Image (cartoon, rainbow, N blue to C red):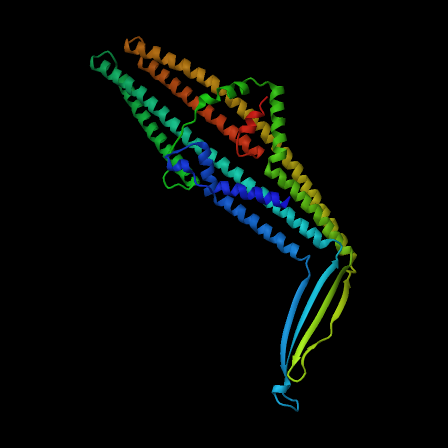
Length: 442
């Protein structure tokens, strides 16, 4: 199991740090933004380092199951002897080995606990990847939404400029009150200000995305093709309460198998259970066997073998109340970890339900907003023609423009709310792609 975790993790990291060829081609889509964000993420790198640290700690703990070997050496000079100083030279080397043969299972439990810690760290790496993908989605959609808002603001300005031009012509021939012309002029200036704000918001969104992806200059982004979502929107809009509940349950089943937070809760419970076993070892004696052998050399006698000894030692704590307290504390930790897991599962289930409702609401809003915009545009064209013929007032045309603007912005908001909800569900389930989310829709 340990090998498979590490192999999979290594594969994930290789993919993370691959260069993004699409950047060199001068365009970025959502997939390439995700990959680039993973490659540039400091939080992901830190999670990987934490995994490496946990793996090293596990290895260090496993070494404690091996014999402890030590050696010592020394030399001597007996300057008080009757012979020469040369004859008084000597040296000794001692080799010792100690092996614990029984400790109530404490060291084995600690090694198992270290293995669980490695798996927890692997889930943390996966959680970091899912989080970075979510950040990439949000930043990518922010840029796309800001760009759509710039286009909408430009369309509003174009409509206001057209009205101003007609109003100016009418004012020059005296068939429009000066107050109506000044109102058209003021609204055109206001729309110019709104366009400038939208452009600055787009620049800020692009700067945030460039920072997230680690790019000094952000290429142009491939726009989202909403026509490709028509079938999905129709499916979501047609779900009744029974189908919605089935969809939520299917997503929670995916999350139970793939959400890294839920996996971490289960692993922490397992780790706490192992700690109970380690605490129980305090009731048992610790037995160790030792071997010691020395060799020496003297200037007169040459090499000689010293006495070899084999020892068997045992220790047993005579304060069982401390052991009992340790076991009780470990059991409390197990209960606490289990409660954390149960609470986390309930919270996740609720979050999935809320996100599913948000996704369906956004899907339905896209359709209604598109219809509203279509009707508003049709009404605007009729009012514009009437305004040209002086059959409608400037305020009538202004109100018609405002309705088109509001419905256009509502459609933009609904579209990106939908994409954000889809991304949120992907993150809650613990995936890096929406494919399994979409395939779970009844």
